[in-house]
Structure formats: structure tokens, C-alpha cells
Amino acid sequence: MNMFQKLRGENSTAGLDLGNHSLKLVKLLHKKNGYQLQAAGIRELPPGTIEGSEIKNRDALIDNITTLVNQCDPSIVEVVIPMSGHGIISDKVTFKIDPNENAEEMILWEAGQRSPFDVDDITLDYKILHRKAETGEAEVLLVAAKNQIMQNYIDLLYEAGLKPIVVDVVSFAMTNCFALESGNRPEGGVIALVNIGHNLTNVTFIKDGVYHSSRDISTACDFYAKTLQRNLGIGADEAINILKGRTNQSIDANALRQSLDYASEELSTGIDLAFSYFKSSEKNDAIDKVVLSGGGAYIPNIASLLEKRHQTTVQISNPMGFLEYDPSMFGAVDPRKFSALFTVAVGLALRKVAD
Image (tube, rainbow, N blue to C red):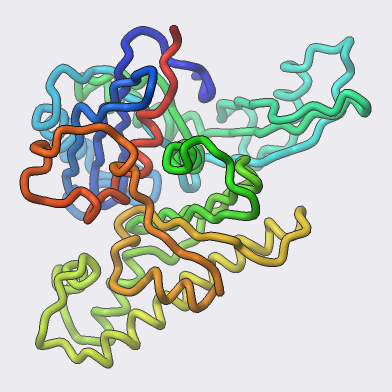
């Protein structure tokens, strides 16, 4: 399956973000002057439905997917889905390409040699980012996905009555959503897109408006929740509610602050480790901006904590602010209060429709 292909057919695209904690669905109408939100929804999954990249409870996942689609828009059949975590890797590599050779064959062969996965067990794809005519070199973005993991999701979606037309990568979806929020006007410097999920945080680096690289770190919402449970002596549900901003007044405020500070310090250390890889290939000593997305973007005070730790601007992704939509879709709720939850789903639905 071509991960970089343009979609064909309808002018609407549906993105289905399959997270460990919840499902997010977005359907966008692609217009000449922007995008219109046609449907959006979130559905929490029973604990343990998906662990890491592995489907643990197929029946529960199918039931929740079909329920979400029926609630949002029963006409949705074709969807763009993401892959992340241990089932996929991406990296940038520079190749010297002989004009007399088949570039695609050479790139895919080289990619097979570099992949840590068995070449017979993966699907490879690539995109040439830049060419240097004077040296014959090309900067290539490589993607390798484990066939078994990808096929498990594809088979399940067909069983749920859906047709996955593109398998995307979470970091690419985040990059596309950031381009939307930037008005497709590239920002200079280094920007870290930090998507804080339930079990995993994805850090994607953008340099001068162009995707550079991404790394996954293990500190995510689950780490915050377990820290609160341990330090405050509360249950899992109460910890999750606190992370959603529903603070119980009986909780010791000082202990809560210290717990959140501790967990944020761990997250910040993970971002620094991811950034050290970036610095090894680029002459940059600082992150110019951090953009938070995912459920963890709404952890109390997380933006200010990371601003202080990294000495940079930290903002929360707000893709809904750049889409046309009927306000009645959300009733009396301000979509800015949960917009960052849809960052990946919006990025998936932004896949361009071929004319």
C-alpha cells in the first residue's frame, strides 16, 4: 500500500485515529479555499482493547468503530488510518543516485538493507524530499511498516465495514495538521510537535517548515495517571479525571502540583533525548517552539511547565480553529477545549484528493 499516494474519488476524506485509549474520527470536505468539517467524534475504548500496536480485543474494537461511525456519519466507508509505535519506523537518508539506474529500485533495495525488520516482513515506501543536481544526491524519507501489524488493522477494518484506502504515519499526519494551522506558511527554526497519547508520546521535529524526523518516548498520559495514583492514593478513574482538568477539591493541591511536576520532568527529559538525535545531524541547540496535541495536551499546567523547562514557546494544537464547521455540531461546548484530541485525525483527513 502506497503511504504517500494521493486519494482518488470523492472530495471528502475521513481520518480514523486508532488510539490505545480512544478512537477519533474526522471527515473533511476539501474545498478550493479550505476545509469544511462534516463530521467528528470521539469514543473511549475499554481498557486493554489495544496495547502498544497490538489489537488485544478485536470484538470490542470492531463494535466501538462501527458505533462511532454510525454516530458521526453512517455513509463513511473509506478511511485513512495511522500507524505508529513499534510497528513502523521512518528516517531520512541521503543517497547518491546514478541517473542511469532505476532510482526506485535502488532506494527500496537500500532501505531494505537499513531496516531493522526482516525485509520479507515489511512494506517499504519512500519520498524524495530534495535533489542536489551538482552531486547527484537525493534526500529521501524512508518508511518501513511491519506487514503483520498493518494487515491486522486492515482486516479488522474490513470486518467493521470500512475500507482503509491509505495507511499513514502519525508523525506525517501531525505535520500536515501543523501546516494547516500555519496557513501553509513555513515557520523558520526548529518546532517540536509533541503528541501525548495514552501509552506513547510522539515527538516530530520540523525544521524551517519541512519534516525532519520523529521519535517515540514512553512517558505519556498513563505515566501521569500512575504517578497520581501512587502519590495521592487515588484510583485510576479519579487520576484520569484529574488529567482531564476535573480536579477533586479534596486532593492536596501541593501534592498534586508536585506529582504533575515530577511527571512533566520525565516527559521533558524524553523530549530532550529525542532532540539529542536531532542535534546530532543538525546545528541547532534549541527548540524554537513546542506544539502539544493528544489527550495529554490538556493535563493541568503542562504547557507552562514545559515552557519553563525548555525555555521556549509552548502552544496547544487547535485544528478546529482552521476549519469551517457548523457550531451546532458541538452544542454548547467550545471545540477549543478538546480540539487537540483531533490533531492526528484531522491530519489524516487532510490527505489531498486527486482531481
